[in-house]
Amino acid sequence: MTDEFDKLVNDDASLRENCDFCKESKLEVGKKTRYGSVVICRIGKAKNGWFATLSPKTGGDPRKDFTVQLMPFAHLTHFSQISSNRELAKNYGTLFSKISRSISKVMLEDKNLKALANSKELGISIATYGKCTTWKEKKEHLHVKIFPFRGNIGQPYTLDSSFERKKIRKDPKTGEEFVKMMPVRKVMIDDERFDFLSKLFIFLLDNSSTLSDHYNHIK
Ligand SMILES: [Zn+2]
Image (cartoon, rainbow, N blue to C red; front, side, top):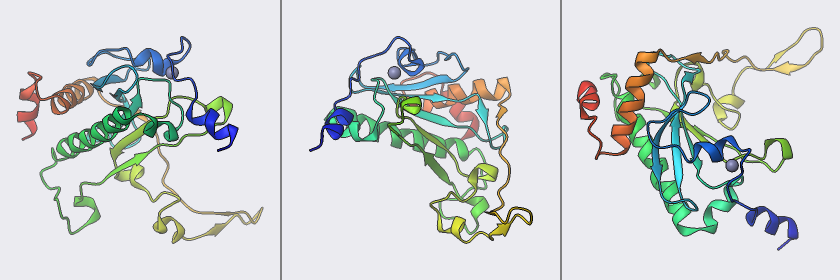
């Protein structure tokens, strides 16, 4: 294999002092990061563990939408590195699914949503977004965002065939082609709602917690 590939998968994954994600990876569940996100789950140990945070902002409807971010404890920057360690890969898959289950339960606060829906609006749609690059400025912890896929956040992505089917428009001045999309504005989730959501996720992701009242509230 090429030297570049070896460098990529064997990159030093030890914690770095100047890395925000490395600092966040030491926070306990329930603690806030510098950006106001709350740690909602931790799984595994230093070299094979993952953690998830709930963002205080959403580009969707702040009364019901939110974004969860999943990251490794170790300073891993490329998806290729996940399968280097069996426990690391196992913990990734486990936490990814647990987060998705919890998001589904939180979305079901809206009792109209259905497991098999007749329309897009009534579906329990979840999407994930993550990318990794080796471009110096962007070589940070790999992270995956998981969120309800609806409203302005739920627009077709470039890889979707529905994106390709969008009407192609032309700028009359430059002749440049473009497609129309709804704007996305990130807004803060109201304090009370954010506190409720953080505690609810902590309960749903770890059933040993005593926060069951939160879940009973939406059941
Ligand atoms: Zn780091």
